[in-house]
Length: 302
Figure 1 (cartoon, rainbow, N blue to C red):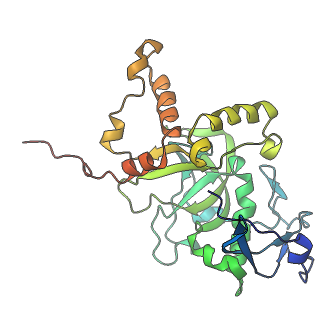
Figure 2 (figure 1 turned 60 degrees about the horizontal axis):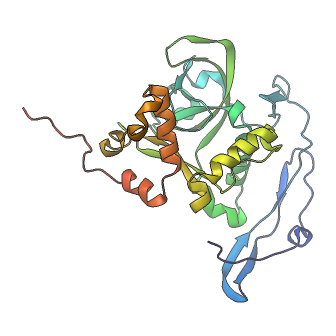
Figure 3 (figure 1 turned 120 degrees about the vertical axis):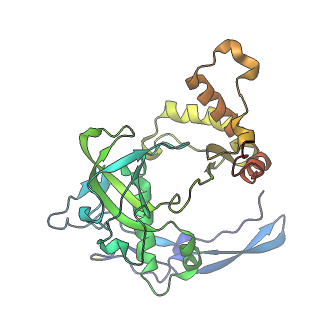
């Protein structure tokens, strides 16, 4: 629900901010506190800060490609290939489009400082997460600054990001991918130290696609709008796309029970299960997320 609204001119917010020059990619504005109002009544305060980002790019560094997977990485943080074992192995995921890969951290690597485990990091395919590279690089730059303004309090909640890694990969069956190497975002692995991690993949926003944004076609945006209008995105502004390690009560549910005449193949069941997830309200998601009465699973009678 709408808590209130406030407005400020961009020129006023950026007043006094320097234009990024040289190797500098961005400059930040001052932190502004705006009063929120709704129906003429004061409802609270929102703190905002603007970043003036230079998108022209800089000259490539010697020995480093200027672009990887269509993204300008001239100033990206690169992870040395020797930090991990030779090959990354593709992992199965329950939601989303980006592929994830298991990375085995070498104990003699600089990244292993502090007693990090072999599975401390995970790789995410950059070709499906191009906009995230710029985001995490900006987070690294902000973390290195003494004064991060209003964004400083949010940084501890961000994923740990080590940089960009280019390496050969194996598929889930152990076969080497013939296309060669992949570019991976090296991020904190939430599965590290967990025997069985329960995790929800939630897509936020009442509208989750727009024609022309991130290469989305008009037809693709129309198809996505149809999904948005028939799922919980329309009702509560978000929807469930994936559920890792669900409880037995959820696993036992058959989304095709009432429409068995349409077929009961594994592919049809996966599609029906995804639709069931997408239409779940928040209270249903959380009820199953916190359902631990059979975890660990019941011990069989001897």
